Amino acid sequence: MEIHTQHADKASENMVLAHLQMLKTYKKHLEQVILDETYSNPEASLRIPFDTKRHDEVLEELKRFGSDVKTVLLVGIGGSDMGTRAVYDALRGHHDITSEATPRLITANTIEPKLLAALNEVVTSHKNPKEIALVVISKSGNTTETIANANILYEILVQHYGTKEASEQTIVITDAESPLARSATEKNISVISFPSMVSGRFSVFTAVGLVPLALLGFDTKAFMLGAQRAISASVAPEKASSAAVIAAYLFEAYLQGSRVHELFIWHPELETLGKWYRQLLAESIGKERKDGTKIGFTPTVEIGSIDLHSVGQLVFGGHNDRFTTFVSAPSVWNKKGGSFIKDSPFMLEVLEEKQDGDVMTAILRGVQKTYENHGLPYISIELAEINERELGAFMALHMVAIMYLAQIFDVNAFDQPAVEMYKKEVRRLLDK
Image 1 (cartoon, rainbow, N blue to C red):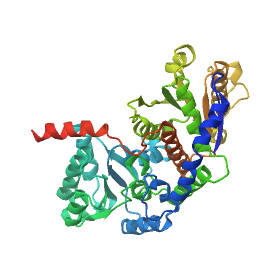
Image 2 (cartoon, rainbow, N blue to C red; image 1 turned 180 degrees about the vertical axis):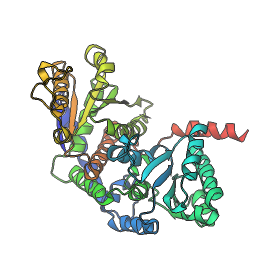
Image 3 (cartoon, helix red, strand yellow; image 1 turned 120 degrees about the vertical axis):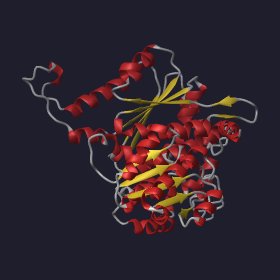
Image 4 (cartoon, rainbow, N blue to C red; image 1 turned 45 degrees about the horizontal axis):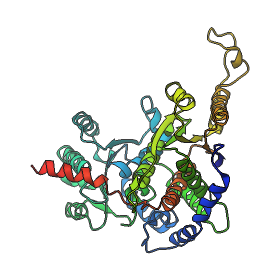
């Protein structure tokens, strides 16, 4: 993974360096966090990829499923399902319309009657219960949408296969002390917990991500290895930290008036990865500081080159209030490129002796050059490949970067007090 930065003319490079200086003490703290086997820090998620024992225990628990699973029903919302869906869509799910590859992932993250009816058909289409794995994820154990969907899907399994089989094919991932852990255990359903200090949006390297990803057949060891390397590089003493640089540039952009952070992704299969980052940034930084100041970026996700035809005019001709991160993997285009047919009725002179990968590369470089010409700041992240290792590295890098950014903003990256407001209202209405 390579990272390049382009700052706006009005942004002071000295100020960026000053922001980096502010993080030196916190960087030392993170060095200790990844060594802390007690998981007693809010940043405990950074320790998880190095805990090979915990990873092996998860894989051991899943051995009973063997290779029979053809469908993974994932019940969760937000941090409980977004990371898994990001990896799945990047490596398999984006082309699910025509692909018959299995195991397949189906997520239930909202209460939608049509979706639940479709899921009923999915379950009943399997004659063998061992072909289905129901994974229910809720840290608190009382997330309304998750518990409601789990209730319905578990009962469908019971009606179709019987209670014993339904329980055997279900895994609950929750806090060890949650009410969900107790009720699942009473029903002989497997319960896997993860460190209570790890918040949902930082949980992809815990059982929250590892269980469904392993059931889906992905290389979780490579995923964890990518995360290890990114975290180690981000907190290493006396070395430049890409995560800290990302945080410093974002903060400087904010001081210069940017209020939108645009993730410009150049591969449609990575769109859900962008949505995973959207939650990470919005929920971690969108806060009210102790002095009453409300801060935060509005994260957006654009797909290149598709969305150039919908937002390009705004970006280059409208109000300049955004900071952009480009995410691409040019090597993927080069490997899969095909040549254009010269005598085709659909031909442009500029396409002669070119491959389709050349076109995508030219569009990306042309857009970046236009950003530079307009004095628009950006960060460019180029993945070496689109695989488990690079995805793990990307996600870990941004988890650390968000922690650094929260430090500079002086907000708590790990709580979400405002989110609880709507949850309380939902429960109040349901109580009636």
